[in-house]
Image (tube, rainbow, N blue to C red):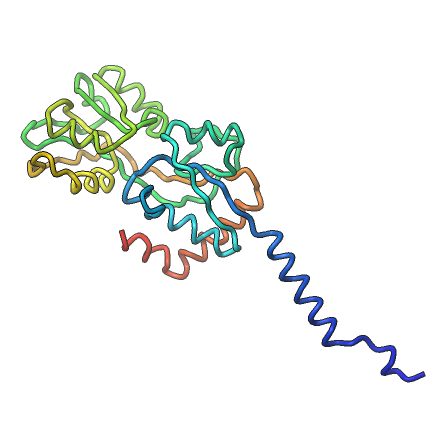
Length: 246
């Protein structure tokens, strides 16, 4: 018997193994359908499917070849779409949403302020100082900002809007005394206003801690893949470059 006739064809085996590995990778890679609130620039810019938060999530998923497809409902509909299994994931959420999900590591931190016009001379050093004020906040602020905030605004004239451009309008037009918003978001929309003068100085009252936000995933393995990609994004310096771009 000739040993060479019974030995496996090593090059052929190598090709088969490579094919199996490629096929397995393709099977594991998934399209992740996610819901995220309507534009919260510079974090979320619906018009061109970009923004700090979107770019970070997309690139973290890409480390494991997952792709991201987004839906942009009003903010309050994000947990509803997730609960109804219309989407696989929800962005800009935290533990307070009570979702049946694997919550990722912290993706981004928003910093909310009580924002007033300097000429109003309002003193706001803590939540209790909101009493009696006309306040406009972003949609679902009572859920995002916690029970102490929800209790404080019971003594205020309080409303929420889903388009944060309206917050800028209402403050400068004197319809509200206080805007509750992330500083970067407010200044971004302020820079887009052309219909009236927004030169009046502002005061940013620091009465809120920073708000860490995560991604809710239905599939624990995708959640694990995402956390791995997010860690690599930060270690490589790419995370900081995305933030700086906006």
